[in-house]
Length: 133
Image (cartoon, rainbow, N blue to C red):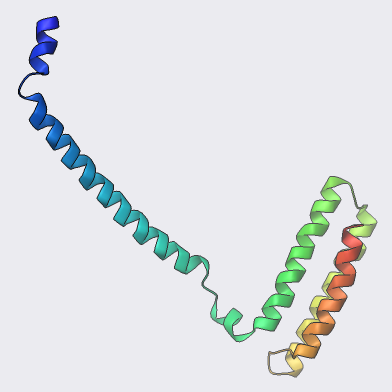
């Protein structure tokens, strides 16, 4: 068995080693290029906004906050920090803010003003403070 191993490490071992190194370099380069291509492609899509979000940044911000608060209410309810009645009241307040945002947007051709956004954010802040109690 020792002779077999010695023959394997003989003269043919160096060219095989060189091929292996060359192949590893090619694989590494391919993986690097593929990773960069995918990484740049995914980074572009991950930060891409929809056309609606670009056209309505104030509404998008208000609605995103409402969604976030909805999840927070559900999490607090699941953890037992809020009763069913408290969670229901907070959800109703959030829905009222959402309806107010929809109404104000309808009056202004689908947009809300900075003052309206500020007012909606103040109302959301009041609800947010009640969630974290």
